[in-house]
Length: 396
Image 1 (cartoon, rainbow, N blue to C red):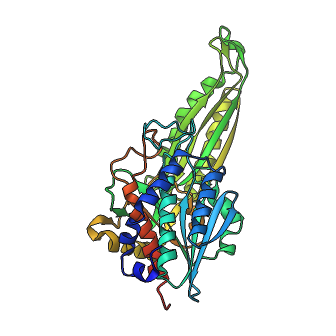
Image 2 (image 1 turned 60 degrees about the horizontal axis):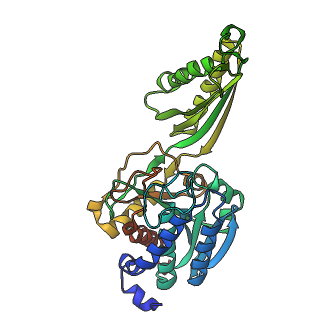
Image 3 (image 1 turned 180 degrees about the vertical axis):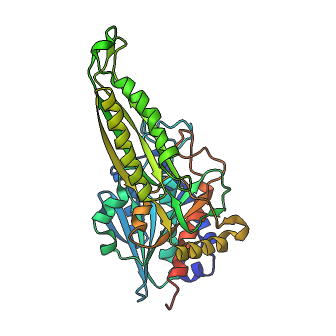
């Protein structure tokens, strides 16, 4: 291991680049062994072992499969949290890469393998360099992809057990060159909800529709009517998305089924707009179904809070990115996205900021041909290190 004195004479980015072969191997190992949310046992064990190897205090099982590493230096009272997500997606990988998923039907299609590795790279660097004064909490979150990992960690006392004055996260961005960053103050990602609508009618022979209350007919009309919520109930000044992503009814060509279901997602920038959509969805479902003699039940499940960057923390985080890559490679006014990020639940409790990190020309996230760009690892790791050294300045 290189001495701490030597580590302080090099920039975080230069120092972490020396770890690149090891970090790449870690990332590709995680990629080859993807795990769904709340099932990240192998990944959590790998993370815990690496942290322990670097002399970092480890806490397992936070929010089920979450891991928190704690690193203290000096007697400073300030503390920050650095967060990465660990879970994969139920997608069959089609990259053909040597490190492709070895688990059928699962893959790291969003780059959480890379985010985990970036945070590990920062942890190793900070454990060696110690150019900070206070406490760093390395938060490895499970179940970001719609399974409530952030809330699970919060319910398990995350910030009571590991207090933080500010928290910071990141996400890779395909299409943005490696070495580039983007963020902005205020709302960065939409809040999200999933919904299921179950329509119950009366089944019949396909040749005798007059004996039925056809739930398929209701579902088709309701699917079209729901689109009027965004276009006619929501102000044009409020961003909102309502997408029906699944519909199911029946199993035979000659049977009118007794039930049908629709499901999908709603994305909004405020909780008030989400509540308005839920109210109008239930109104339309009930009235349209009743008009045909059917019943409709709506299950509307808010999952993600909007992610809102604290203005001051976003500015500091952006300054750290500019220090790494230059102002020309930083966008400080990145438009908000209708995608969602589970980190928003943590940022509802502790102020912080979130940053996009360039992933080069890979396929888009949630795509079966996506792969994280290993060249981006040092930039994300160095960003985590830079914000730590800034927020926990020696002697504060």
